[in-house]
Image 1 (cartoon, rainbow over the protein chains, first blue to last red):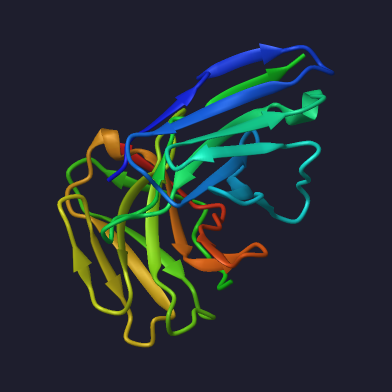
Image 2 (cartoon, helix red, strand yellow):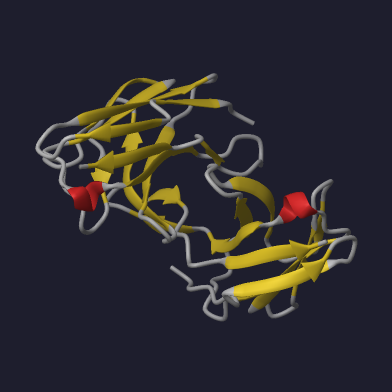
Length: 114
Length: 114
């Protein structure tokens, strides 16, 4: 299965600023996914990112707040824009399974907005 | 998407089998049942998945009822390192492009007791 490197692992940011999270995969993948996990909660899908097309956002998430880039088949970024304390969460990227294996997740970015 | 229902928490003695149930009564015929777990401060880890037959791998066994409305994840000899939140997921379709992704419920918090 794919190996994902996600950076940064954690950050503390001032409100009103933006943070870009990077996700690097060791193999080419068609679909990448971004999730948010708020404190004590389960994972919520933010958007699906396919290379060569605009990301598809789930209900409650918009491109202006969470712009996503997918420049090639091994890399994606998620930006959390104009942050507020309510954006404090763990953000995770994931890739779809290949060869019948399950979805693989990055180790997550723990974001704290102060 | 088919909804899943899991007990919020379970305890299991170390060395004993852990049996984690999941109800997915509205599952459709082409939807798989996936199990993931999330150990504290890590990204979710794939365990096993199945369609209608029972499955076994080096981590666990998955028992799916004949009507596919429920399943049980079995960890045959639980260890302290198996303490985690276990998610039962029915893979569905989401987003405008219909890309396959995972929708997480609240999961079962399994505590393995020494």
